[in-house]
Amino acid sequence: MASVTVEAPAKLNLTLDVLGKREDGYHEMKMVMQSVSLADTLTLEQTPGEGIALFSNLSFLPTDGRNLAVVAAREFEKAAGCKMGHLEIRIQKRIPVCAGTAGGSSDAAAVLRGLNELIGRRFSLVQLAGIGRGVGSDVPYCVLGGTALAEGRGELITPLPQLPACWVVMAKPGFSISTPELFAQFDGKKTRCRPNTEGVLTALEGGDLGGVARRMFNVFEEVLPFRKRERVEELKCLLLDHGALGACMTGTGPTVFGLFSEEAAAWEAYQELKNHCRDTFLTQALGSQN
Ligand code: C5P
Image 1 (spheres, protein in one colour):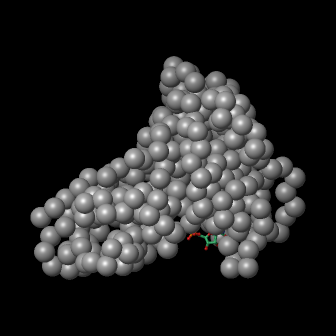
Image 2: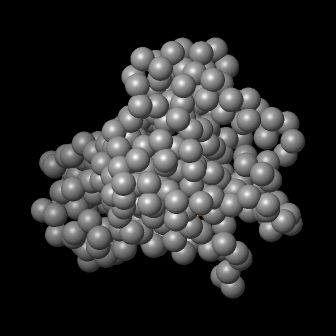
């Protein structure tokens, strides 16, 4: 019996831009991604037999092929050309679900990294990211982690200079947003503001945390329904009032986050935001996997 434990970090969008609609129905994206230390923990256990059994501490999570972790295990077996025997995947969820933080994609990426460990690291991380493309748009980024530019559907990844060390406060308001619906809203409206992605890349090159934080922007914030947008704005203002260098919504939301250079200010903001959102976290930016 072999087993391995793997961390699955949450992802944030420092920028999110939608460049247009593609012929395959997806959208062309340009996003600067960042992983943080808030993470799910996965244990993979390989025993004789066959089949995949998934367990998690959240009873409402699907445990069959609707869970990306299961899809990832099947894609891995296909790519490796071997069966992994009976595989038990146990997920300790900490990343909030349907929050714009790629929790499901990160679990899938962790399954790919974990299974690769179990077969003696046959694949490089770049090859694993390639396998992840067949699982979901965010999975290749989640395999690599750190600070990276994501283009195409989100699956074309270019590593970037690491975001300078910082504290991150994340808060998920108590409503959810449908990803396909938000893309449809985006198509129906003319967006006025776009992120200055080049400016963020330059700030990263210069190790300028404030320069990155000031330029963070997500085009989906503009197309949120009025009340949800108001709530997101309110949380961003709270973060900025408590010393965040910048604040932004991540992915298709609704999680909002702020970057802090000082732990004390981040701690105060965390205490305040906890009064507004049950799902509030104090976490730190992470480097890439290796
Ligand atoms: O790739 P993933 O399954 O995460 O995408 C979920 C949904 O989000 C897609 O079915 C599509 O409606 C939308 N999407 C998109 N363009 C992207 C990524 C996602 O339209 N680049």
